[in-house]
Image 1 (tube, helix red, strand yellow):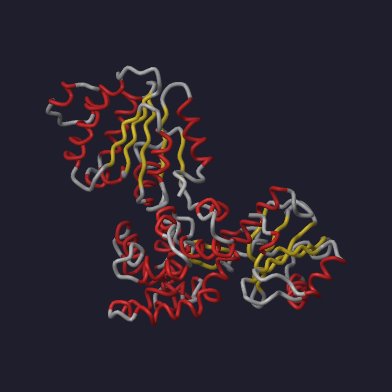
Image 2 (cartoon, rainbow, N blue to C red):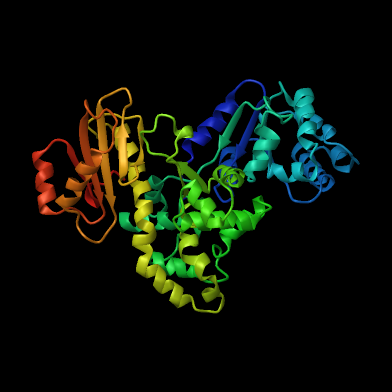
Length: 468
């Protein structure tokens, strides 16, 4: 595994903050396992930096540990021996530390201190205003509990609101980087690995060694001692108090109840009672609300669907959670058989649509399409669904696409069906230029290939000409 992959933009943002004159105050947050600490370690290389990892102990114990690190960093023996009841003297000494370069102070898992001492954001606000601001210092607050980080640091009601000079919400790694993680794997194998690990660095790390996707699933997931076996439950337990309620909602969505009314009906609760739960799951990057891409007011759309955003969570809810009793009693092979039987049709095929959408945006950036678009996504109405629709709202061009992740070649019939479904998309229906793109894992039939040669409005993308 390469020591560090992706995160170029995030590193650029941190470097920009580091180079700015005077003080910098950066907030870095994101879901667990997404690589925040690895990013910080890469950034502080060869820079004068104090890195402090907070724990779930009380404030006094965290303050004592921070004091000891600060004394070691500054070489101040008096600070090491001092009996302190506040944070101010520690930061005062750090603010006077002599260095030609900007000093970096990182407080990782910041939410633990704020959780044990609710007044800590106010304490840090006074320290920033009275001690650190204007000094040649870069303060970085890093945290995993997204809801707590937003309320304690980023929210308008937080004492720290308005102090930050930059904020970074770290996301999962895009599929295009999987060729760097798995250079010996084929494109298809990389797609299967992405379907399970979903761009989460810690999950990717567990899958680096293995012959095929199924043996790696067997080793890392199906074994009760495997790192990923209880991972979703762990994530929910760490950040939420009503784990059962959230898990019930996720299970309902994974079972196909994607409309608000369907989720409420399945769980036999009122729709209004779901709002806060859904918002929290969206904030945690575990869930997303989608509307047809042509909707002009997405927030008001009544066609919104809730879908699992995290690939591993989707896999776990489909193949692991329903069969945990089998696994607990040692019937791993039975569950493995179900995974082998429907991994492609029930899981990888849906992730393939996300990969193709990412690919479409790359083709757009590279100028590999007949026109450039600014909006792209899925589209559906009551009777029809199209995997990809891309267009420029101010223009007249629109692109319709389908994604087929099957073992069979894709034929002309799919194009004909796509052309018919496109007629139901009412955007600029009377005055537009339509294009069609088809992604296929197993290639295309001769009749579809022949049609594409004769027409300039058809694009075919298979493994042979996939942009990644």
